[in-house]
Image 1 (cartoon, rainbow, N blue to C red):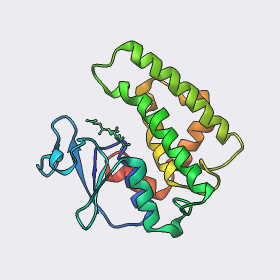
Image 2: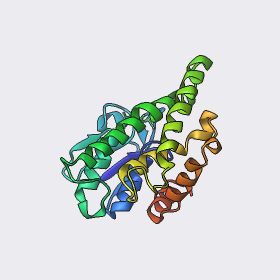
Image 3: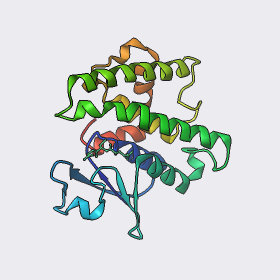
Length: 202
Ligand SMILES: N[C@@H](CCC(=O)N[C@@H](CS)C(=O)NCC(=O)O)C(=O)O
């Protein structure tokens, strides 16, 4: 398998899952401005969407969209508990978290990485992030270690990746002590450290 990524971007989430699952993989960085890979390929020939992450399977098939990729990887190694069994309520609850992180948190970070974004877009996005992070902190207030309980799942890989971007948004996680504690707990996992090192972020 080969992961196309940009250091620290949302492609960090599938890399964390690859490391947590102990799956063998290669990776190649993409310049998202020029759409050229580190090896000199036209990324649009590999993934016509032009964004990361993209996973190319050993048979050559392409899988895109972070939430789909991380569930695919988790299901290759079910014993890891990275995703609950298909068809269970727990699986739908995991998908609920992945959708929430993707549409409410990740998307709200977009203007902070868009050089042409106007201040009113940024203000609205910051207000949304603040509301939604308050919700996440309230969920963690019962003392659970991870989003869905005591087991690390692919949703934690995604949330951790998005929480790393907060300095760029101007949202201070210190407002919710449960969030920096959660970020540090996830960040200390050996597989997460390995993923960060692989992207030059440790
Ligand atoms: N819906 C996609 C969004 C991926 C995405 O937003 N990727 C960003 C990096 S975090 C990107 O590659 N942006 C560059 C671009 O859109 O050209 C997913 O969830 O995988």
